[in-house]
Image 1 (cartoon, rainbow, N blue to C red):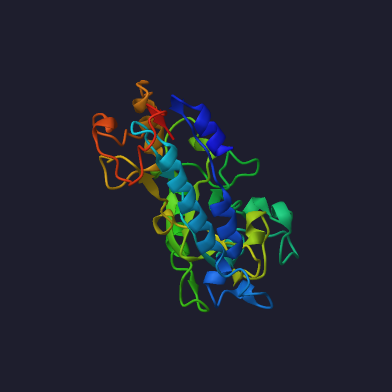
Image 2: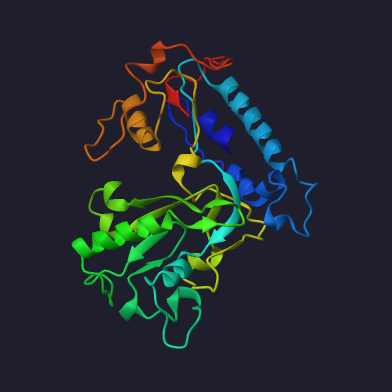
Length: 306
């Protein structure tokens, strides 16, 4: 389908998402980590080369794409994240309970999905999803108790500092690398819809399966024994994406948010003021030499971007 679309785009933009690299690494990362907890009682040989084989095929795809492109075509290969092993799951809700920020109803030791046994009248914070933590803000949540402003900032700072000290004896390192206050990261009209804190887990850790759906367990950190053994929902610093291009770019550190402005600039479309990114090319990219051998073998494709 990709090559059919490429063939039919004599001028303009062709964009295609290949998600096999994501799915395969989620499910086969344990083969690259001999001591991974999910290897217990499972095959560790038959598919041990699954990830390497996939990237070999991707490399072949890249070569065939370059052969079909004209010398005035620009190719960008982009990923929004990398991958790491996911060995241990962290239940942030259980941690919040241990430290007095989350409370359960009288007589309850654990809670099922969606916080069914949580006592909101005494709960200051809770976690839901893969990296987000929310404060129980008065006036925002239906049973909020944390006052916005100074108290909110103090709770954020206190939780952030303590979380970064969460140590896992089994792995011999801290489970959390960084905690981010979203008000220092984002701006705009939708900021109120985001979590209040984003948790940047260390390599080997991720939010536990139960915590993602609002459970409160009896343990804070547990082995991940699922075949879903690799992940990227951790501190972004340790899972950077990749960027390949057949033209020189003007920075050594391209960002995902630069891709939109770059594409618009290639087609001479004004960049809206709300976009934070900047074009990756300085001047006309067609004046530079292609970086990849094999680019520009066909003359039937001109002025296109892939």
